[in-house]
Amino acid sequence: MKRILVVVGDYYHDGELARQSWERAIEPFTSKAQAQVTYAGVGQLEQELVKSPDLVVLFAGNYIDPEAEQVRYWMTEQAAGQIEKYVASGGAWLAWHSGLASYPEDGEYVRMLRGRFLMHPEPSVVTYTPLAGTELGDLGEAFSFLDEHYFVDCKEEETNIFMRSSSKDGEAVAGWYHSYGSGRVGCITPAHLSDGLLMPWFIKVMRSLVTWCAKL
Image 1 (spheres, one colour):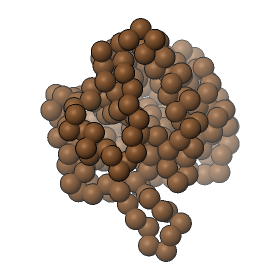
Image 2: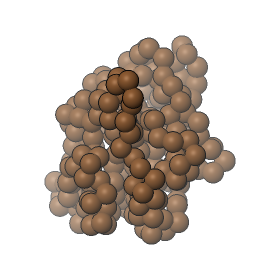
Image 3: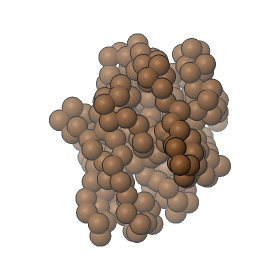
């Protein structure tokens, strides 16, 4: 059985909604006792990593109180180093939506992800187009929903792109994966709103990424 640690929710993102989305994605595996899920907050992440889960899913930005006069961040250099070592030693990491946001550009975490969030305009209809021929298998046809269109800085030559996005504001990479040391890293930019988080086509893509990351 694969042990999966899930961290969802932050100042800007509804943890309960993300949890509903996650549970729909992982249900085929938990129902067959192929996966066991533990939830934790960013404050418990370092102590949970010591238990060497098979996969960590992060849907939370680096900010603690982004509207404060002096914004505080939770990911210290020590935490980033622990995460990098965990993955390089055989762990798996899935950075989901805000799990790409506000982390230091020159830090170990972003170097491991090989990509990071840059900005998003006001929500609009975004079309997500899965790509054929990747290790993730058949991801289905393109789908659209109201979302924050994440624009990212992604080192495309150092990873594998499995999905792209487009909207009235432009085009972007929306999903990528790669091996890192003895471990695996997956990144996916949608979604922010219930329209996308609970959409079956998104759930299908998310499930395929989880399957690859955790070797399910």
